[in-house]
Amino acid sequence: MHTLAKADFIDIFVKKILAPRNLNYKIMFCGPTGTNAIEAALKLARKNTKRENILAFSGAFHGMSLGSLSITTDKLSRRGAGIPLTNVTFVPFETSDFNSINYIRNILDDDHSGIELPAAIVLETVQAEGGINVASVKWLKEIRKICDEYGILLIVDDIQVGNGRSGNFFSFERASIIPDIVVVSKSISGFGLPMSILLVKPEYDIFKPAEHNGTFRGNQLSFIGAKAAIEFFINNKLDEQTIKKGQIIEEVLRTRITNQDYRLRHRGIGMIWGIDFSMIDSTMALKCVHAAFENGLILEVAGRKDSVLKIMPPLTIEEKILKEGLAILEKCIKNVLS
Ligand code: PLP
Picture 1 (cartoon, rainbow, N blue to C red):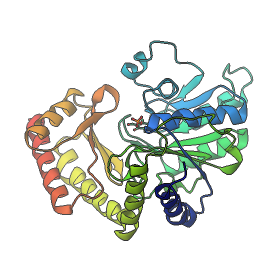
Picture 2: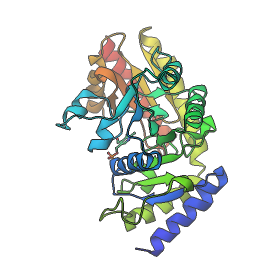
Picture 3: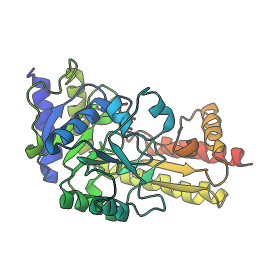
Picture 4: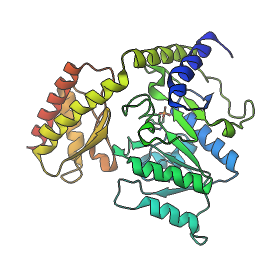
């Protein structure tokens, strides 16, 4: 239905987020969760290209419904499907030692590769659940180029690292690439209200009315929150704040945490960071999570064997509290290491 809340959100999103970035997308409101928009993106790519295969990356996480699970890699989640998850080709992500660009070109060029031309390449520019793997600008540009050359749609899943998390509103901005489809959810609504949207280049917007429908598409309260969040983002220059606070996190990680043991590694961007324990003992990451919780700090684990401690504070956190949290983290890691 058309409502004022919806119109106001569309208005501010188009004028203040899309237009200044020269992004011309149609907006599709999906069911309330991220995974629903991923399903819509996959359907739309397949419908546009009349192809079945999708190319996704090892370490990816895209959600828990069947289409999303088919492009998600962790075994535990995939087993939940209970049926074969098919029509997807996985390629190692950039941050492995493997040259994925050469490999993708190879399988696309080789008429004996046994791999069908995909409808879409789907990626997170920063694999979050996969262990905070940040794709380089060069790699992202190469992927865009491959998509252009072979007529493949590029889908960017910005559910977790969009909405300002990486320092720009969209995580792909740093690479100056324009995906064909962008999936946005989670923080778009400002404060945990259910909302997910698909941004689609107009030429690919070919769903017929109600072809991908659902009862709870476009939650009215979420629109109000989303509009307020965009106003807050702009009025408080949240992008600049995120970069500044990200530098604070990086400095603490570099000078007080990963220097405690030469086998520790840190990586991240904006306000999503990880500390990789895999070269010492993967179980240490979870031990740090428990130790931190005892001290009033909530952290998560991510990545292979849960070996990466995930640091993801709210973008609105005050510097003083951020520094307190990092001090707790430093102490906990020291204790666990010793
Ligand atoms: N894609 C990414 C990158 C995510 O991080 C998530 C959730 O964590 C999803 C998709 C799925 O979103 P939802 O849990 O809202 O279905």
